[in-house]
Image 1: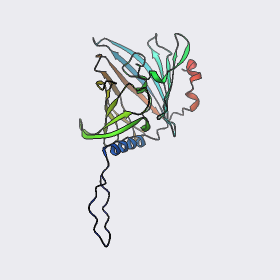
Image 2: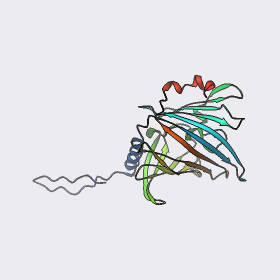
Image 3: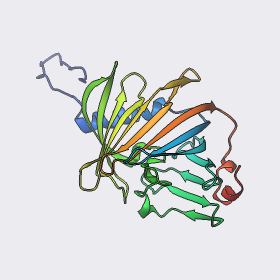
Image 4: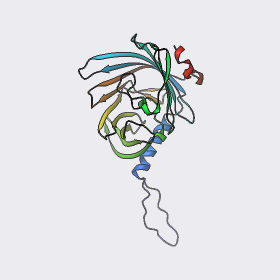
Length: 259
């Protein structure tokens, strides 16, 4: 990207390139993606979580999702487990932030207590899945430093490929490579590199649908762990936007009574 070349009436200035650096372009893409998705207010959805081990054996969990957009901060979200019976009533609440550690609470009905997730444990697996606790918060721009890598096809569409490096403490990742489509900034793929800088996991999102003539949400997300051979698939359905959720619906004190 180049800015105009200015000429004086007395002197023709040499041509100077004002191209963005790879870091500036990566940050701009992240900011544009964040701005594109602003204004959804809130949404609810149903989710089927499918856990698959290295042998291919599957177990399934039925979850309800609630998300509230927060102006000037990260989103608030809640996951409520309805099935199977051994996890029914489990609920997780997340307050996402920028560089400040996310606030997360987990209600476990078996012990009838709300447990606060320590910020040092965010790299641990969420409910036995291949998603870490740190994967579940909204991805605020401030959480990372960025670098533009390249453009490349993502199937039939074109994608930006950017690198982002966690700027917050206690991440389980050294870096992530993210594929975003150039038209609507839909996240198509993410490669996660562990603390040894080895490719640990790959997340792929597909079956996108558009809501309110603007907001895109995936119908399927699959996280594959390359180190242990396990995977977790999330199948999303029944998205509903602007449902009237309020801040009072996202309080840790009410996790025991959430329905």
